[in-house]
Image (tube, rainbow, N blue to C red):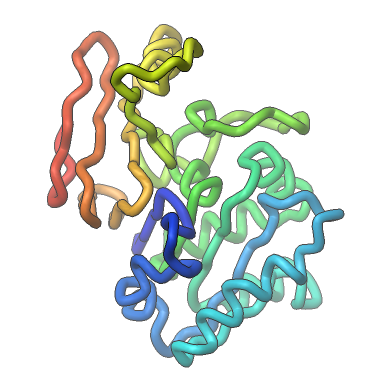
Length: 230
């Protein structure tokens, strides 16, 4: 597999996808990229959402088309030379992948090596389940299981506790500890501005920040940019 999994599409103060533009240009150069806007509810205009990455990638000489622009998801999968699944709500994305019939087509394509990029919700589907998303479950989903391209879950937009802050709700670390009361797979917290690359068995932390690694029954550890180790 050829995965690039970004914690976010936009870093504060920078244009869309600009912070890792050199990487996605190499990832998709010379390929037709199919964008999957399913993390946004259909009523929120998939075409308008698609236009955002379409314009950015066109400026780099890369053609991008939304999956909804093809005659069917099957036709989109036949033509896809790269995939980009954007952010939004992970539960909406999970349900839409199943309802549209794209799920098995995407899975087969990615497992056969078609380059994949996801951001935010688009990386939550890469692990065994979507249960470590930050999103509200605004729709029922057919399953909480995900693609299992990776042997660990992800938590994008990972936030560290703010020393001296007044927020009294649970931290991300506490929420992940709750997850580990029921599940055994590790969780990788990706801070904004960071991304992972993976072939399914070897994983690299990329960008300016370390990743925070959570394993059941163990203290969380920091993994600096480089090979991901648990």
